[in-house]
Image (cartoon, rainbow, N blue to C red; front, side):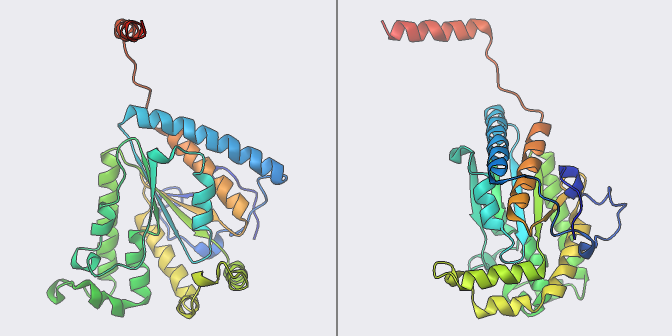
Length: 297
């Protein structure tokens, strides 16, 4: 399914642009017309976007009022790692951090479900990237509700049926609005890949001795629930997309297109922040110059 798209707004879902209707992922493209004409053109575009992103983050870092929380959610092999690696490779590594979240450990399970994510939030002036996120707590657990027992939630406080997910959606929206009001907008990417394309990527992994370790039989068992996961993602995005903290559903069958779109969105978001380089007045600057000149005498 191909459409002529390319602007960041084409992939934005905030619950308002779509009229508040439930998102239908099956109606959204996993592949669009290429945004690049050749490998050389892709390299040039990515270099320009990466350079621009670095310049903008430099201003945000100097201003020290805003930070960004960038979330990546997707099915296996949709391109989370490669997109993070290519899109953010031009940034100063001291100004951003990447956290990859796996299955919660025993210590995590002794806390409420958001605890381990709170601990990894970025500082002002920096970008925090979450590779898989707290949204897993409304996705995997929905497909495997028996795992809720591991979270040790008191039985008298455990809602029945869909009420649990409604409460978690509300908690997450409040959490993200809290971050936004404190100067930390949340940028949420869902990498939308077709099941057949994902299957080919998984086969390629299994045929590559250096990547075979990434895949196990349990991963393929999860793939049996593809339809359920898509339904869960539809509800997650519909219920948690807001004007301040939107979701971006990225066509991901073409990795190069995927990375260009994400980079364009990041540049647009950074350009929208009201930040500036702090300025010293002329007298103070001249005073510091004289101190340096005196030191060098």
